[in-house]
Length: 168
Image 1 (cartoon, rainbow, N blue to C red):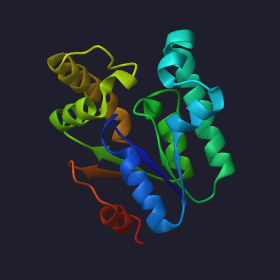
Image 2: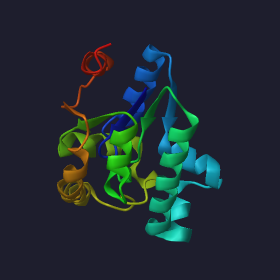
Image 3: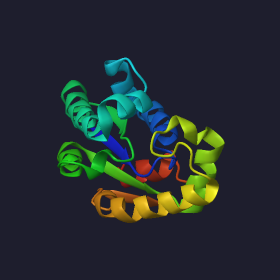
């Protein structure tokens, strides 16, 4: 089985994904990390040199590749991955998907603590600008995220909740 975690940057896809993969005995894949390894450069550099459109194409290619290569994996998508091309439909055709729905204030707190400068869409934003950007982006992306098989509301989602929804 493939398990996909979708949601805004900072919602905890990677953290939850690693824990879930360990419990299931599955491979864990972070789609952004996969792209960085393949391209040999950080996402911020890909954005700067090739643009967001090319990055979204690389995301789609990486998504298709990991689905072909893995039978049992937990895959943390990038925040925008479900929102381009037919990626969300592709995700749902190939596994169980979970939208991690974290409030904007909590997303902002986490991203500031993690160092938002590493994220090309957030670099240089003040705290108030960051919250506004996150709120606007979530409003736009929610229509894609809500197509996930399951929604995990709140900032304290755990592995056990996912396992229950998977009937495991």
